[in-house]
Image 1 (cartoon, rainbow, N blue to C red):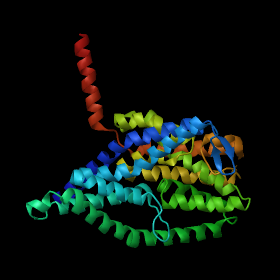
Image 2: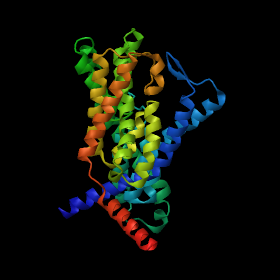
Image 3: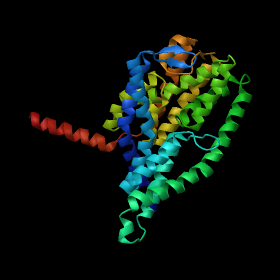
Image 4: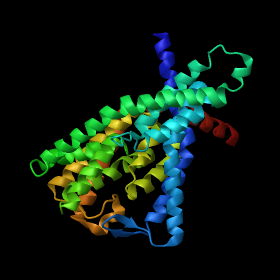
Amino acid sequence: MAKKNNILKDLQKAFNTGVSYMLPAVVVGGVFLAVALSTGTATDTGLEITNPFMQNLNDLGVAGFAMMIPLLAGYIAYSLAGKPGIAPAMILGFVANNPIGESQVQTGFLGAMIMGVATGYLVKWCKTWKVPATIRTIMPILIVPIFTVFVLGIIYIYIIAVPIGAAMTWLISVLGNLQGANAILLGLLIGAMTAIDMGGPINKTATAFTLALMAEGIYSPNGAHRIAVAIPPLAMAISTFIDRKKYESEDRDLGFSALFMGLIGITEGAIPFAVKDIKRVLPAITIGSAIGGALGMINNVEALVPHGGLIILPVVNGKLWYVLSMFIGVFISVAILHFTKPNLVQDTVKEDTKKNQDVKLVK
């Protein structure tokens, strides 16, 4: 039992470490993208940025987001195994966040978390090898990274990614059969799929399905999807604003960045919160997004461009229900978090101690 508790504590510490090092990339990516996309023009392919300076700013934001997931994986491994774990985990985190293999599967932040943990423990084991002193000097720069990336990379590509790719194909088939038959169920599924892995394979499956229907002139599923993409970051932002005692100071600061990302429809703004408290955050944002998506579907909301958030409101049919569905989904997620996420006792004690000290100083 004690060993199990130690493992859980190590994992919690690793996830917190990964998020801490990832946060600057999230903030840079979110703020730069928000500023750049706010100047964009809605087209059939999304928001088009015509100003060269804003396009460069957008590229910087995209770079921040591209680094976000590898940094998460790298520093999860760092917490478990030290410096030798950083490079191989960042490589595998990049692999998890980009299409790979015959099915071109990407697993997003969930895959990166798995790769970070696996790398950490594998590297930790490698560090116990008894090797000659001459070989030990090249272990962290040659043997360990090559061995780790090869073993876990092959396992990921051929064992983990293959069934996920098959599952995504099946999901597209299921969604296709629902289209036109049951608007509420389809909206619930699209909304839930959008939020559950925030940019991972399930989210991308929902995107691919809605884009395929847009090509046929059917825009309601895309409306549900674009409502749902904004709900997770908006919900986390508002939750940090109104339930401050439930979040650490860095999370409360991140709430502002999440707000900007929610307004421009970037679901990944909620990832740092999910990594640190996945058992409470993920159900909350998934339920809120599912309900928001269903409300959009049954009220025939149509998003005419492949982008989300309030920024595309001018090119939405059914603007009132687009906004209402989004806000209702956010409210439900925030309410769930309010009742399920506990206050941080440690932070509360610190704040009380500081107040007492301030009172003594005043006296």
